[in-house]
Image (cartoon, rainbow, N blue to C red; front, side, top):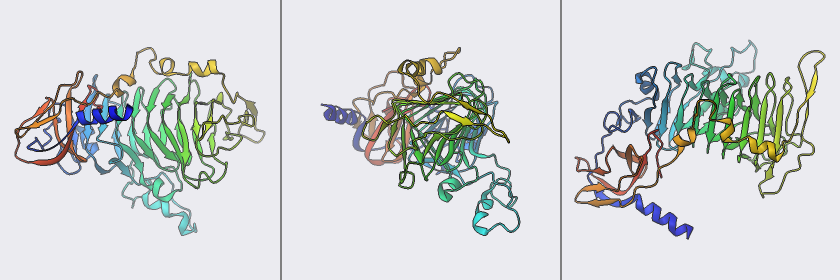
Amino acid sequence: MKTSLLKRCAAMAAVAACIMPATATEPGGGKVFNAVVAADGSGDFTSVQQAIDAAPTGSTSPWLIFVKAGSYKETVNIPHEKPFIHLIGQDKENTVIHSALNVGGKPKPGTPAKDTAYWACSVHNPASPVYKAGGSVVTVEANDFYTTGISYVNDFGVESHSGPQALAMKSRGDRAGFLDCKFRSFQDTWMTTQNDAYRHYVKDCFIEGAVDYFYGGGDALLENCTLYNVRRGSVIVAPCHDKAKWGYVFRNCTIDGNAEAARDAKTALGRPWHNSPRAVYIHTTMRIPIAPRGWSDMGAIPALFAEYDSRDANGNPIDLSQRKSTYKGRGDNPPTGSCPNTVSKAEADRMVYENIIPGTDGWNPRAMMQRLPAPKDVRAEGGSLTWQPVSGAIGYVVLAGGNVVAITAEPRLSSAPAAVCGELRVRAVNCYGTLGE
């Protein structure tokens, strides 16, 4: 029943045809997106930063930027004065914003050459192509940022599998939403805001790294995400919460890794960077072995480093009896302190979207992330393409294979000069820019 339903839904949104669709993406995405970025020159801009630079300041509603599949080798900065940027990728496997950079300082004389390779792409090296760039491939200073369908990659971290710090994403604003994206590096892949009153909501994302690769502050809820470790002894989080109410909450996430990370039980769930950090894993599937102690020291005393209902790859409960609960501080005579290493079902049931995310302003990123259904009755007749309108759609993206051949505000395409043959697919776009089924 389920299989036939899926096949029927797919058939509704696709048709094999040879038609004459509008292949040019009109400025502003055919009145659907405010701007279109395309590396091949078929959009309004060829780089993401160009589109950000052209976006208005002080927006109070979403500014939709569609990024076609392609390789965008650049660093991107979204300044504080440009809120409500919605960065929508065609799909995360083929839409990649990347650069090779790190923040390592100048090597000392006599340092072995193998230990100085990082210097070639350090932001502090005057001879580096990223000299004086920000410390992250993408930096978001603004509030109300939303992104989906994009991979954010620090090439230095991914290729070298070594430090120093090499961020792929730094998200410093409030009300930041992330859906179906990838974040890849090695050390310090993603730094969240250090304002503990700010919120992040992360859904269906893939986060890769080895050293403190999700770190910072703020209240962040991650649901259905994969945390992918790429070496023995990886450390997943390193929070620095001071006054956060919830801190980092992972619900229904998966901890996975490569063969090196899975080789023995050395991976740590996290360590306390500064202040009184909080991190909780709820209903987590641990596909690689985690260190029996779970957590490690870093100099601060956490307010809460805990788990509830952790399971192995086969769905069996994991023994949490050896989990660490006592931590050592910094200094010559370091203080010690303790925190709970588990939470009860009642406590876990409170750590949910409805309590963490809306705040006092009613922020609702799940509404942004809701995918509209596939268009029905897609038909190719007389050199044109038509389909039934989708309720709530502001427009449609038409694809042939992996290529966007048209973006239209209407549920139809008329004849145009260039022909496209093959299977065409239509995806509705909601008012926040998210592509539908």
